[in-house]
Length: 88
Image 1 (cartoon, rainbow, N blue to C red):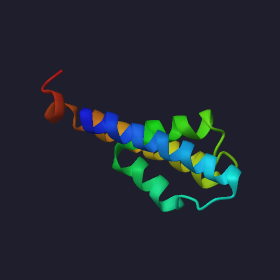
Image 2: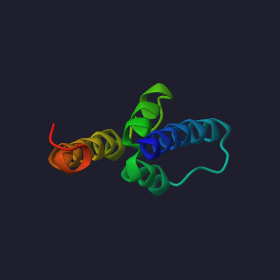
Image 3: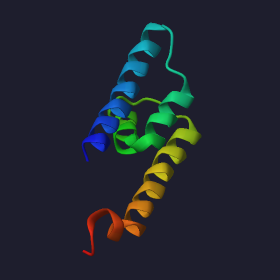
């Protein structure tokens, strides 16, 4: 659980930092890093950061990709929940 909290904070932070750099026309965080953080468990934070910072919301692959990553991760947790949490 600590890992997921950490990764979501990373995903959220990366979106905020990249938005700030975009405004300053500074060096940007590569999109593969943003997606990588989401794929490694930070999809909720990255998705929240997208909309809170209004960042990457015009790119269809982010608008579709982030919720899709989150949906796949949620489905995997649901499928493997007996192994993860015992028989609930």
